[in-house]
Image 1 (cartoon, rainbow, N blue to C red):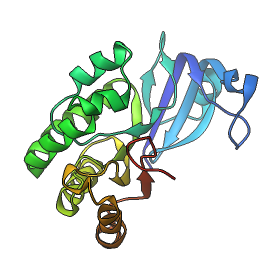
Image 2: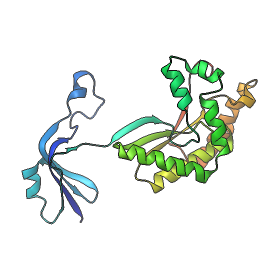
Image 3: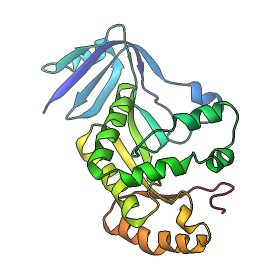
Image 4: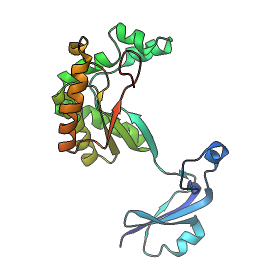
Length: 229
């Protein structure tokens, strides 16, 4: 059995507490152990506590001295679009100036600019860029990220995004939770027949996504000019 002991963390943030969503002042109760330590056996946390107690159980373990550091659980990002081509810097500037999503979309930005670039990109290019995004997440302390599709808006392009997402899960240390968001926007080619696109999402995209086991969740973008409830 392999074991690892992390000792002498100036702050060990355990987040111990009720096993339910926290509300109000409970959200500030981080259950911090000063000069904290933890013993990890076979990749799972076995014991948490003051370092001197952990040290007694750490015989034969690999030791990591976390002196002067904070040890805490990885962050979880619950809403990302991890796999896409191009960038949205112009949109960011427009939002900073107070423009709405609707105004940005009418000017040719928003979802549409990313859809065009993502459709044009192949699997390998998308994976290379998404690998960089995954590395940024990990460097910032995020270890789990939900990742939505939604920048393809055709059967094959949505599947392409989700297949790249699945590969990211297999080949990077980031834990990726895939969400199918075919209903992100009505494609421009279907603006006059939105019902046709909704039918495509339900009857063609969803069965293919399910058959290949490419997503854990399904989402819809409910916003004026996109989809209503």
